[in-house]
Length: 460
Ligand SMILES: [Fe+2]
Ligand SMILES: [Fe+2]
Image (cartoon, rainbow, N blue to C red; front, side, top):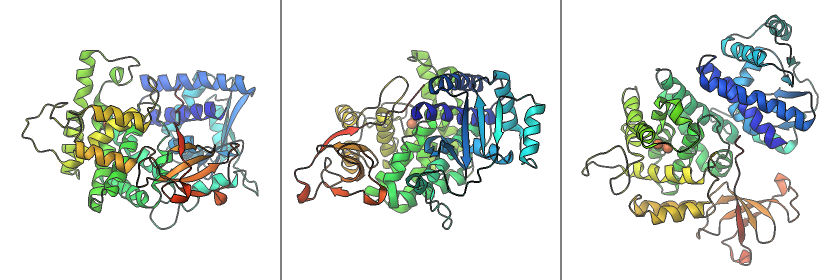
């Protein structure tokens, strides 16, 4: 049920943020809104509820006392809309009509200033004939309905000027890419400085708890796959740059370049970007243009670096010089572009898409290793030993039946350091009691990983 709920809410949040960028009858808005309406009805039917109530507490979306991390990440527009309405939640009746939902979307994109009170917001809804979507009072309970273990994800967000929570950092990364793509699609400029500062936060984070960040980057984005893909590519690239001991200024540079590398996709026509089936040769030729277009867009922006431009240009150029866009053999390629090219392919292979399940890192490496012309061999070898068979943030089942999250890669790629989160019977272990196991240590000689648990991303 929570899986369906997550999908439903992410859909709602994406519809609201997409409506902010496009007009009401835009096919993207229509498609997302239509899907939300269908799934709302299905959800109510399956869970035998006559309405879906979503609470909003301290900027997080909450359902029946559970803090919904995934939807909260993409749901900033919904949260800020709710704040302007002074409400602590919204309920969507199963009877909600398409017209009511469209009107709600209009309001969400037009309301710039907060209203005076919840009363005024409710009157506004009624005057617009929205009857099946109701606004709830703010949560006033003395004890928080959010379970303790989930609160920890939100603690420490305000210490100094560095974002501490992995959820917030991921949210900021996601927003900066979504903004860049949205602005370009509308013919506007990219705020490259803010992308760079988000990348700086990520650098800080990659050093302290990269594992947490990587767990978050499994959340899918539902409208284009490009935003989530760019965030994952950037996070992995920063992690690798720091494992390779490249200088710190490179880390920020590579993070920014990673976040913006596919920005050219925002100029590819929707029919091609969102085509469910295989692209024809002509369509693929248009799709390939995103690399050149991205480089041109970035060249036209203030504050972009040469690396941002070359990453957008060169991330599909292979080690032997083939790939696209075509360039002369003598053209210099920066090692960072070669790294991004590896990361880009690895991310695409290991991500779930509606048309394919995720591959394990092991499978992805074996495909990449066979493709000898495509990757710089030294780069690929360094890449594999830094990420390991079980990259930080992935979940694994151990031979003794326990489940853990990989904390860091060990000296051998199959023996990482693990935090145990579930016991043999599958029961969750409280955060403070979770043992850390270093599989490289002699005392754990007899213990091994049985398998990787791939996080299935729930696509509609
Ligand atoms: Fe690309
Ligand atoms: Fe890409």
